Picture (tube, rainbow, N blue to C red):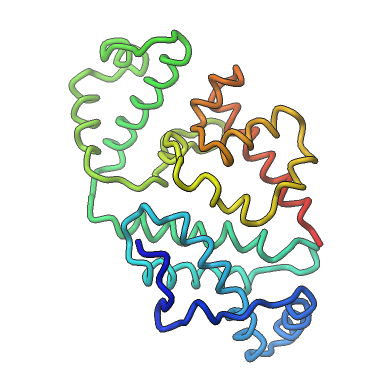
Amino acid sequence: MATYKVEICGVNTAKLPLLKTSEKEELFAKIEQGDSLAREQYIEGNLRLVLSVIKRFSASGENVDDLFQIGCIGLIKAIDNFDSSLQVRFSTYAVPMIIGEIRRFLRDSSPIRVSRSIKDTAYKAIYTKETLTNKNQKEPTLEEISSEISISKEEILYALDAIQNPVSLYEPVYTDGGDTLYVMDQVSDKKNKEENWVERLSLNDAMKRLGSREREIIALRFFEGKTQMEVAKMVGISQAQVSRLEKNALKTMKNYLAD
């Protein structure tokens, strides 16, 4: 995806306005009073936020114009649902909304159609393989995986083969107590490790509010590009615990960004 394009969807990204905090507050106050012109100005003033988010999806292969349009939908939804009384920065609220909208688009527009049950079998096998590898310090055999999840070897092989075609990085792999692990959590990001949205939103100061373990996990995940499985091995806890601590840490940092 050519994220270096100057013009996206007819918008000259080099000339996008950058609103000051006072301007954002003034415009949002007008939006809450039903001012449609202020809403348009607020949208335009936050398009740079959409641009920063779609860089995260540069490896998806999707057209940058399409991602920008979808990201704008997420931005508009964020504006329409944002509660300024919560004293949280708009960008903190909007980024997850924009990311979620793009994730849904990538998931729903995928030309590959594999049944949910087959995907579940494949991802359960993948997760079990990672878990047994972490536990026993060696890669398990197909028989061991089959025995662990009570699914025949034939079914596992069929399911794994079925997802060999490209699948979304945002497909859920496993859910443990409400904490969903995604395919992207199994993949390192060496190229863009300094360009992730956490750093772009200047969360370095917020990290100081974390405990030592949470701070270490965030540093390994978002600044060194480690997978959750790699972090789990380095820290000495389970991947599910890493996922849980990571989510709590991000939530703490987002709350700290309140104006």
